[in-house]
Length: 222
Image (cartoon, rainbow, N blue to C red; front, top):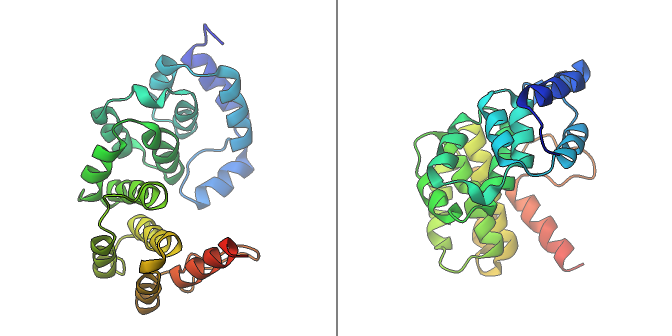
């Protein structure tokens, strides 16, 4: 679709606003009321449009930012662009989509992983840990898993929520994918008890690392 204006897209997003969707989203810290299925359908129609994506991102509207992440060209961003964007993400869903749909596909992902993991901002650091978890699962060569477990053991319990969640995921991923570290990963989870009492819906796996690791390994061997 060519000739699409930012104003036109913003009007479409406004027309998709649903008070009930906003109510649900706001419980998760996301300040928008657009059904994500409808947002994806709009993105599919717009196709990839990098310039429009940049303009939508600049509006600082959450629904517009989510749409921008679906229609942008992930490999077109420089590290400074993505560093600025992760700090501008604000809401959990925008942060999550930025890391998963854009940064992971960008050639500078490893450079950003290293920089962000050590960032004093816990939300930025959580993006670094999400990228580390991706490497644990898909390309662990060169990662010092013992050192990662040392850091998790020392810092997981007192980490702020978003960072704690990302570090806990990394702990579970190490235990799931690397049998030689599994006992230690489970042991760390049992001692720290992070997310042990997290309310888990029926048919969902608990994010408590020992349960998560055990269940995913069981499925691999089922």
